[in-house]
Image 1 (tube, rainbow, N blue to C red):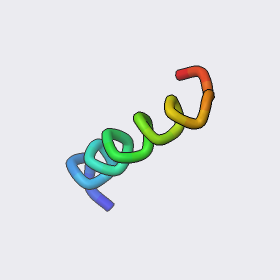
Image 2: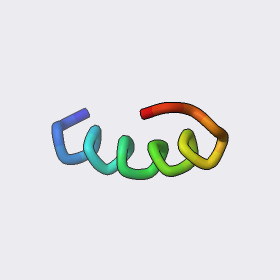
Image 3: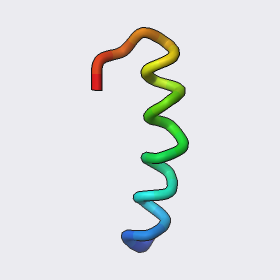
Image 4: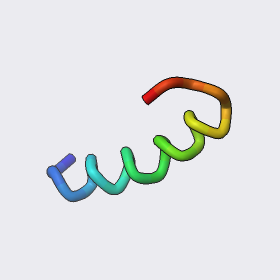
Length: 24
């Protein structure tokens, strides 16, 4: 995985974690 893929993955999962009630 390169940095752009990792960043894209984080951008995808972070809102999901926030919606699930997790702290970021």
